[in-house]
Image (cartoon, rainbow, N blue to C red; front, side, top):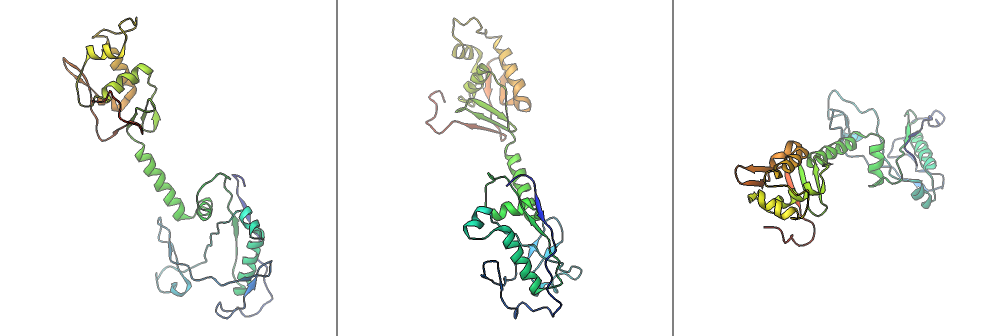
Length: 265
């Protein structure tokens, strides 16, 4: 299979002119292997959620909507070439058998067959892959809704302690190691105001030439906040004292599957 689509578009063979057989009395058709093709039960009502278009079983088609009439039907078949081969048949043979059956039951019917192609690694049920590849309205609507839900869930800030990263609206923030350490120190002490002197003493060695003073720690906090963008207020300044991590509805913290950090207060 590939990413392109291939269409089988050739008219079904028409039998010689004769009265159309009714489904209840028509003889059973046979496929290429001589096996009988059973008549299908009526399909349940299908509704396109984006419009008023409706496909209904034949016995209910005339009574549902006064200004709408059935014009045909679509049958989605989930079956790849390997599974078909295991059943001793192929996709072209199945398409041809279905066309011959339809031509026998309804000689005036027009047919169009489309083969759905998708990448081999595509997961999910075969029939769902087919419906989406052929742009069936219900499948497209569900996929769009799922994507919008996933995008909505990705909004906000995730402070991932176990992986040492911060994700903002689904994108990793480019924090330096020390900036993450600073944020982590505040997160693990959520709700507690941390004095500047404690931050310096805890995150830098006394012998570190780059260690900031109590005042220059503000520069590091400003840099951290700038990378948090619209969520910079999660690092709150407590005037005259220090800084505090304030969580709100758009912020989540992941501590990992192990035991809580011993640093956590």
